[in-house]
Length: 247
Image 1 (tube, helix red, strand yellow):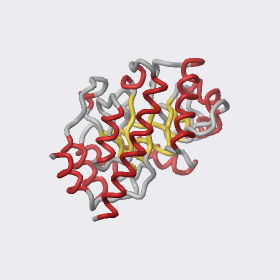
Image 2 (tube, helix red, strand yellow):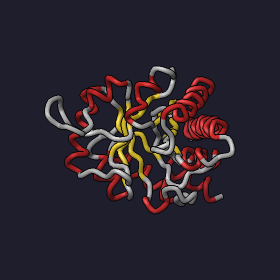
Image 3 (cartoon, one colour):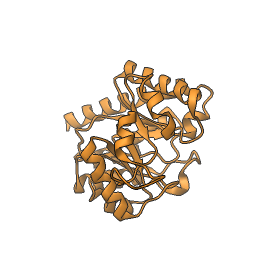
Image 4 (cartoon, one colour):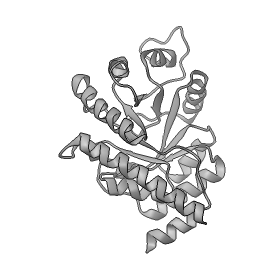
């Protein structure tokens, strides 16, 4: 099978990073509905032992952090601002104080300049906030990898929300290239991810994690979809580890 051949191609690109799932409701949910899904993600994390990041509006960060235990509450964005002047901007210290322990950066819906992205990753590192930096191509991903984010999300922008995933060669090329630059960066593939089979495939091919928005929110039972995806990532990571160990 083609997938087995591709697995063999990336097998030498081993990762010691813990697998993960990102549950990203964006701004479709807020308040009580956001908390309800966060609790479902929290339950899935406890049941599977999987690291799960959960994004929420800035106003819900403290609310969700105080009512969950296992998930990593994740801000939708951050800036390099330091305490002082900066009315209306996103202060990293304030996000941390509210309970955020990770943040998305440079998402297609909220792009950043490369200069600001580099400064913000450095500020996050100072505070112990994990960074999930987004790139819309292998070329941009290669450039951003030089800033050493904790996780690099490489997804073709035109596939976001379509239910169509990038082909297997895209995943393997991303894995190989980013691992060659910095093997400590977590690699996330998420464009068009809809089902548990989708997340299993990309992790089996070498990604450290995956995530979804519409694939979860549009599911008949979003909580069940989160659990299915979490279990699939755990299985894929275990299968990949076994294959690597046998090589």
